[in-house]
Length: 493
Image (cartoon, rainbow, N blue to C red; front, side):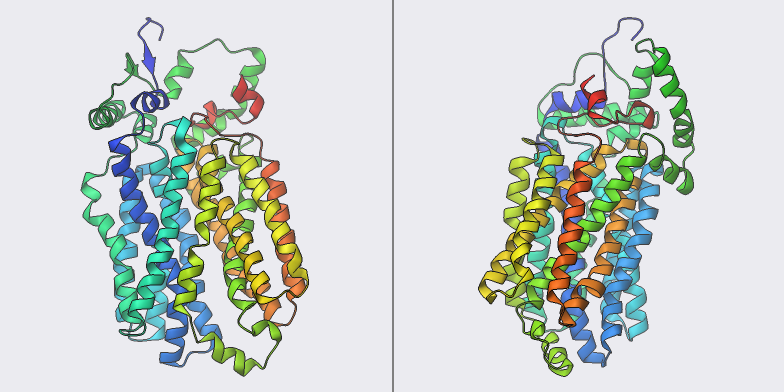
């Protein structure tokens, strides 16, 4: 500062405080939300066929039960990202937990198809708030270990899928799909139970001028972790900019270019937040990120479906009637076992994300995935097909994990939840399109064309990752577009 008083920002405070007891509490809460979302998504594999049999639905009506959830997530991701960035992370995930738990529980009592569709759409709206919890947890982690702990957080998605598969295995044969819907809503209800003890993000508080509240949160972290804050006073990035270095003429020009974005940040709403994502400093990262999210979701859900499709006889182009009957026979044991295929992907992410960086970790896994899929252009024995698909799924799980670390790191605090939410929404579109296009090709006896489509999507996703303008490994988070460094050269300076 100008008077010589020592200062520190939120990033410096978190590094000094370390990852301790406080962060474990935050991890536990955020992980419950991630488990809840995974369970609600996983149950779609079980509820659709059961409801189709119980109510005599057509195949398109069954598919629509899944589609409305994705459609709701598109709306929710956009809406809750705005709420979170404007009113706080806590308010964002409070509303999403209420919507998800209430709609999820009520859907178990749906008297007819239309009411089930409406309630599952509302569940999707609530699930769209998942990126809010990602941003909230991220903002409490010290930069040097951020990648590793975000991978650990991501592992709870796999935990959720295994829990749901276990629950379905136990509940569906005995009690039916209504009990599965009701019990799957329990984790999101627990978020409401413990909401009162959750803290607001100190980064969000500091950005919005609530420095005293941010200081209180940091002091609480220090007490629980048994550490001390740096000497001096807490300042925001904007205050450091005001009292910082003289700006060169070239720097002044750059600053002038960003004033429009700064003005938008102070009064942002839906349209202005979107404009920030397309501001000169973010537009390249935003567009590339959208393509990667789309490719990741398209590939992930596609590989999960292909694991079943290529080994259940459907790829032999049997009569439609026979295939339809087989599709109703869900093997809960097989789904349970295959869910464990994601753990190696998580281990690879944990080993590479902070050592080699986000970009190299993602791009290499995308390209290796292409290699795993290449032999499937030709007919392979069932055992080899399963091994190749599992290898590909490991790679896609790894890229999906890392992109959820990279995405919130490239956006400033002012639009972080919104930016990740919109990118996640683009990914949901990939998840919706995949069964219609790629799996439809398998059912139409075009396995080679389906694999080529996956190869192209995955390869282009790897190229997009390579084109990201900067690496975020070990980098402090930015609070505003004004302070955002957008290339590796700027970060090194």
